[in-house]
Length: 181
Image (cartoon, rainbow, N blue to C red; front, top):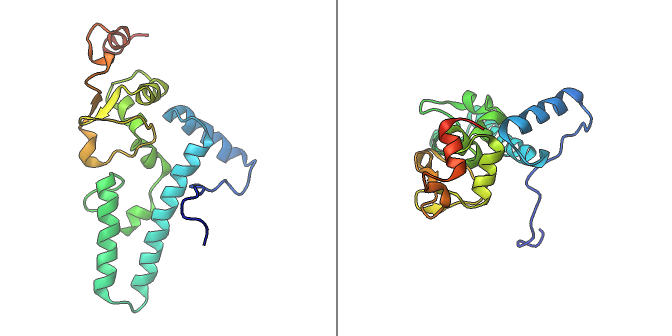
């Protein structure tokens, strides 16, 4: 066991470094979601990998002779967590967890939510607004573009009240509302 205060890597690099199809797909996702680098994509893939591993462990537990109450409790815990985070629907099952794609994870990032709600003109600008402190969830300012927005918080994403972006005469806000460049 290592030192508990030491930071650990939260992702795994791809095993095949120069696989052309994977690299092209990564570049497409980085451009589409305005990610800073491939490491952010690899972190999202690793989080999904953990959810899929939990689903496979649950399937293995179902096929073994484990107590049905334990299986049902773990199944409900996993599905409720994924529902709260917005990855699956209310009537989801284990197959839906195994079918999750990295795009679903990237759609839940604050940066993407800001862009999709029309608070920014592009994913890159949404990232800039978040890091510069112009975005809040409820009354709380959030400056982390990779923050995972859950279902409850999704409707509360807006400009920070003390931000200059709340003024209607701000040049960038005028551009966003007109839809121009």
